[in-house]
Length: 257
Image (cartoon, rainbow, N blue to C red; front, side, top):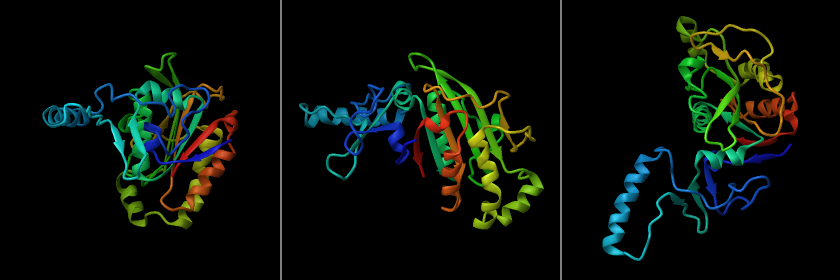
């Protein structure tokens, strides 16, 4: 099992200098990125048009490429990838995302970038506020050309009784390292072994598909969010990954914290 520590932007964007230029099994990882597609970057397109008009007038020899984002560090740049590129790069991988509200948003964005409506908060009964959603675990199978895909497993674990008056009371309790150390390991086992039992679902209580966690076959893409309000929860999450069953222990693992 290989753990790569990297920021989320490296999943959705290709780093042309700070990561290896080539990776096995794919023609997309680390190669020249394509411009934004699928209407996902309207603002970028508007800015690009304005910049193109500017250069036509002032520097007609220069062709602007706004979709390549340069950092202040010389020689380091990021470029946006399309669905096919992301799918090809993550094929056979298990993406681990550890954090709170922002990381929950990244999880939903990445899953829905690969498969439309893979995760929907209202349908799947969880919140992005990073307070009570403990685990979001999803396995995707992409089509042959990676233009679309389907969800074969979804397990959303939310701390019980966090809706309505009970949830309001718990809000004032909040999270503590001691409280999380007591509650989170049990929830994180759902990522190690898949959904282990029937449980209450409903309004902000989480949800799950009837199918169990599929065995790893080297072609799926698995995305798992672990709640971590404190750094103490990070080793708990990684321990759950190391204890993975159903063959997922041999998957290529990428971790963003």
